[in-house]
Image (cartoon, rainbow, N blue to C red; front, side, top):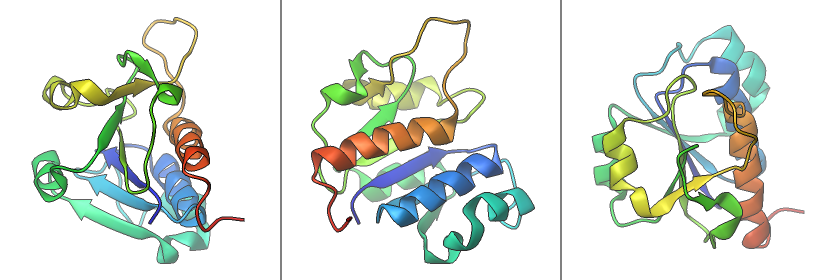
Length: 155
């Protein structure tokens, strides 16, 4: 697998479906940390992921702690509007984990504190608590990481 995309408690099935589809087409894994804001049988998830979901390398975790314990020691980046580094300032490697928070509220402070050395952000104009759509953000960062690692096994 090229990259590992992690969604912390995603709330909108269409975003998760779109990100899952992007993961399939980039040979990346998707990691979903519960609780999810939808059922995995949700028609919107299926519609966004279309028939790609069956080909997706997807992993489920009951909590962030379960996820972190399983992957402790691996490189993890957290995409957050509070990051100091731009996502383009990071040198990505095959197998890196890129974590995205809930659409409505991101991740709790303790996760941000745990990953404080690897907080990244996408530059945007200043607004009042607004940010890019989750699936757009994931695609932007994924393709920068894939570009840096040479688009392995992609034509």
